[in-house]
Length: 492
Ligand code: G6P
Image (cartoon, rainbow, N blue to C red):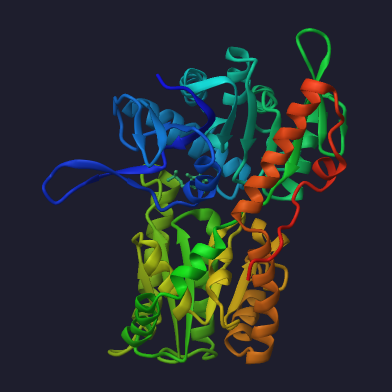
């Protein structure tokens, strides 16, 4: 097999299997954020991407797609149940999102997680050139860094954690807390979304292993009796802001935005929620606040409409099935009480949409509601801000989303505080244009300066620093250790 200098390892391949009109099956690039985030990094080198093909039992040889070698990892239906729906999304996901739903600790799930992580590590080891850089992505693959280091000590290994890392008091529930930390510490650079996530991780390492840490540098003992520097630092992920701006300026997208308003009966204000249907997103809290505003007569159907896109997600996991039922019951009740023949209170769509349609929705929306109870970053917040080139529109943003650290001129809300959220929604609906513009300008500056290219560069700078230290003994520079995210010059 052809070997690569850069290998990305992620639970999913960056493509989806689609059936064409004639019944034949092909691959199409997935619309997800991770794909675009890494696209630019991959484009510069001979890259390979190791991941699951999205279907059970898919047995395929590596193949080339858009200049990248894709290496499918096979997962059986039982493994999907135990490793993906089970340990990844029934144990780690709720535990790391502050136990919003109860994590289930099941030993057979853990065994499958270990087995599948080993399979990913072996596939990456096979695909990597001598001294290549392997970049492991996210919580489904926390054991891969250490497994890979054992298989291939010549590699430089990065890991990026897209979701929150919980406080030690919660993390310590995990029966396999030592093994998971050991797995992660196999990396040279560990990236987190927020300062708080990196801090929580470091505290867990200190509590469990007592390894010394200095700023973002952790000294991890080696089997030879020495020590190895691991960087654990925040690298807040972002979007390709220019690509979103470009889309938002296309005449057909603008026309579609106008058409959406029209089709909703031209309400004065459109509120928008865009989420995967996940209990971390606070969709129920948002509906509660909106429903009460209707009950109180503070908003009126016809004047205000809430569009809620809830894209289908993890339907095999029980907590997601229950959430769907609850949301659909609530939406049905609100609409039953308040809809008229001409207007709806909540236009609810349990569907995924292509990026063009999402941008048209962002352009049509006067207020964007992001009320996550816990969220690693929330790129929807950044996408909404990027496309608002006229500096109009209001972002209501949960302080529990990673994006709140940077986007602090949004209307920040605590989604558990329903009254506070109702006030923020009313304030957003009634915000004078001058204030919208002042806030939006500041938000846009942050998103344009810290785009996904800056994110990739800052992570790779940290990787280079660790590599240099290993080769020449040069100390890790202060900017990498203390303030790894360096801003790029704005391009607009
Ligand atoms: C989050 C995770 C990703 C995951 C995505 C979609 O953003 O951080 O790792 O891929 O959700 O979830 P799914 O389970 O469909 O891959």
